[in-house]
Every structure is written in structure tokens, then in C-alpha cells.
Image (cartoon, rainbow, N blue to C red; front, side, top):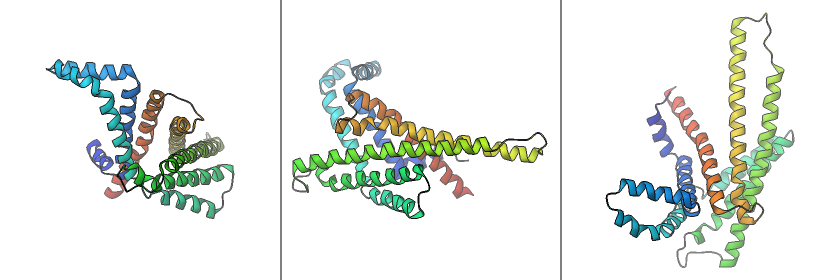
Length: 264
């Protein structure tokens, strides 16, 4: 089993881990911008740690501008890691379709991956414009705005389908748990094996539920953009903070498994 330091090094050098880290920073800055008590708490902490209160009083009027700039930088930084990720989503959707979905859960999973691919594709083709480099943009301003909104709409569809597909997996996993019961006359070895299988099933169920919770929280992000889930920017930031933590755990656990696999 890897040490926490080894796992952190793996996480912090993994593309998905870095993207989740920048998303966490983006969520924190959004909360600080739009949630006044959080910003006040930050400055109280800084004033407690600082030996020069005058310096902090000069920074306070600039805090919103500084935090807004930081949030934009974190957002654009995350997009570097997602430039070609639409290929992965489309490939996963095609593989799921080619295998032949066997139920509504599988169809929703294919839909989630396909919609996510469209979201990432639109995000990629608007990336040059998002860089803000004069003369490097592709689209007219109005067209770019439409593409950005439509990208968020596809992401919202992907999240909804993902939640539905997740629930189908939960139902299936719970059905597996009900089908296996330990008899009184079974040997101890069989009991241990079934107990281990039940533990793994519960662990898998929790991971699926955790992802469903994260997707449900993330709905507020594209929902606010397209106007289907009106929420204040502060609320969106708080929800984004929690969902980032939950999805970051997936990457953290994967990094641990990869280190275990290397060690054999």
C-alpha cells in the first residue's frame, strides 16, 4: 500500500489530478468572490497572521479584482488538460454502443458519454477564443457565446444521463446483494469469501452513489449558464467545491491503485 506522500506525488503529477486541483482552486476563489462571510474570514485570518495591517487595508479594495482574475486563470488552466478529452468520451460512447446496450442503464451511460463528448468538443473549438489572444480567435463574439452556452447544455444532459445510469448500476448491485445469503451450514472459508464479496459490492455501490451526488451537485454549474437551474454564483461555487472534492477522491483512489499495481 502506498504512503500518503507517494499517493500525493502521483496525484499531483497526474493530468486528471492537476485538473481537479485547479478546479478546487477555482471553486474556492468563486466562493471568496461571491460569499462575503468567506472573504471576511480570509482577511481576518490574514490580518491575524500579518504584522502589517496597513498592507492588508490597501489590498482589500483590490481583493475582488484579484480573485476574479485568479478564478479566470484557474478556469483556463483546466482547459489545457481537456483539449483532446472529447476523443476519449466519444470512444467510450462508441464502445458502449458497439457492445450493444442491454438495458436502460446502459443506454443512459452511452448517452452520458456522447453528450459529454459534445460538451468537450465545443469547449475545444472555443478554446482559442477563450485564450483571449488578439487575432487568434476563430469565432465571432456572438457565435462564440452561443457555442459556450450550447456546450454547457450538452454537459447538463451528460450529467442527467450519468445520474440515471448510476442509479441503474446501484439497483443492479443491490439486486446482487439480495441474491446471495449465507447459510448456516456453510464452511468458514465460504463465509469469508461471501463476506469479502459483499464488502466489495458495498464499496462499489458507495462509489457509484458518490459519483451520482457529485453529478447532481454539478448540475448547478451548467444549469446556471443555460438558465434552467437558477442559482447564485456563491451557491454554484459552494456546490462546485463539494463536487470537486468528491470527484477528486476518484482520481486519488485510482492513483493509489496504480501505485499498488506497479509494486505488484
